[in-house]
Length: 232
Image (cartoon, rainbow, N blue to C red; front, top):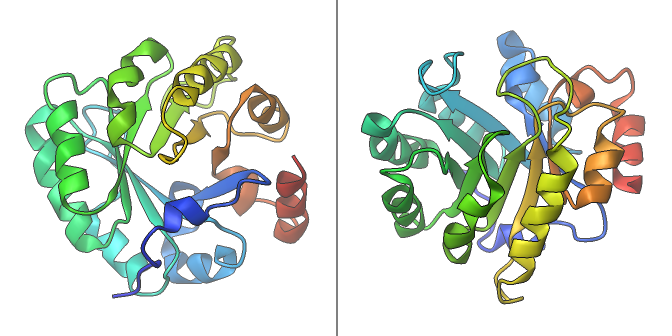
């Protein structure tokens, strides 16, 4: 099985914006070709997985992760949007399929702790995600056990503009992360409403990484788009 070398998250760039390529926005009829096209540019391959209940849209499955895993050694980050009864089972399935990192929602109140513990037990990078209206302080107790913190700046899957609170929330999260020992790297990720006009604002507010969809997959010149992102 193709895999990034151990400790990959500590080798992600610190001198420019990290880009996770969201396969949700790729041409799913040509997913292998799409992975090959973006592989030279992507720091991380991002997979959104949803049960259609926690988030309205029914999204990707472990079999897709397994297919992508077979053709790339790029880190695969699975954003798991599933209800509590299925959470641990889905963590196990996506881990077996080849995920390198799995992020779960702080809104999974009853199972967030055990979910993060299971991800760590499997030897994967654990992450916590907050919806746009969830208080940022909810991530504090999870910080010692995660290395990815993702904040949504818009509703999941919605084509609306960025929330007025998005930058303030990133700044607040950054302050909490700064209190964690420096040898425990945590990457602050912005997701939702990632567009040409919003990325500079999110970056200035503290985002170290973005989950980019159409911004990269629909770019007329991907090389130029990535050069611009790296300049931020």
